[in-house]
Length: 385
Picture 1 (cartoon, rainbow, N blue to C red):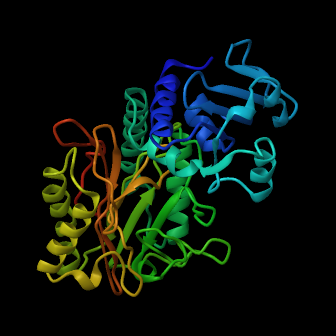
Picture 2 (cartoon, rainbow, N blue to C red):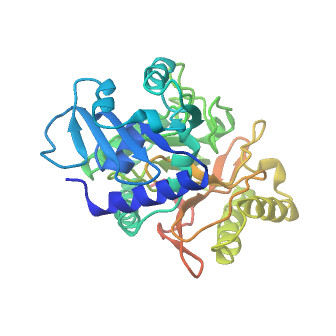
Picture 3 (cartoon, helix red, strand yellow):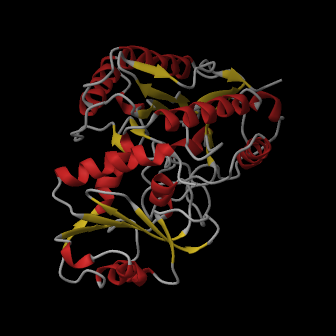
């Protein structure tokens, strides 16, 4: 059964389509079928700018008899149900699907002008419905419950990989679905990232806020090094306890860190307070980025901010079905915050021979400001018994 919240999502997307002069859209990617249908299936969705969305299902053929659901053997059968000849502009997921899939869909409408559906779908997904927000609240609560257990998982002599495995075990036992959805074919990751000591400064080929050497198979995050005394341990493990995601980073230590490490960690906390305290509907994402950099520079911390040799060019991002949704909190962003957006804000610092410090929280944009959905202890917690 297609639940009512999906229809609200359809209406939002169709409004964007009409404003962009798009007559219809075809959707076949898992993440966007999940958004439109509420479940993942093999097949395709047809979204007209006006009227009901139609779902063409190859498998599983188990959703029962509904007017909007058609069971088919191949996607070409949509022409048996819809007059495609009247479509002037068709939008396809050009940034999500393979060339062969796009070509197959294109042959259904050889007369139509082609548009890119990916950006419209990402724009539609920026603003969450009440049901989506409730699911993010639930996963954020489970996320925090797991982080509370991290101090009990560490023992002396552990490697960063061993500690990450223990956290992943607790995550799975706590309901994590074990998937970390990202946008972009080159964005690969574990169930999150854990970086300790000098490994925090290792640059990664991926566009994440922090790097880590990882392994040859996945050059990101923990690399098998023993977590030494005086190391910072940054945990950025996924909030994937349902369909929607939360994002949260907390910093731990093994023994005492330098005074500079504690100062920069407190600066990260202060940035959250000062920047998020005044954010709300209408706040420019570019202004959040610029103001963050200004405050960091005032504190003489620019050299450590968001990496050492390789620095991230953003301080936060949207999230929902994927961990890196729109908007992006970066200098060239044209987006402004809107009620119903969910964003992660993550000002972080890397110190040589110590590691990364700072926090990340998930925030809901409300009519009057922003609400922190991950209000967990933010101070550096010493793991050393």
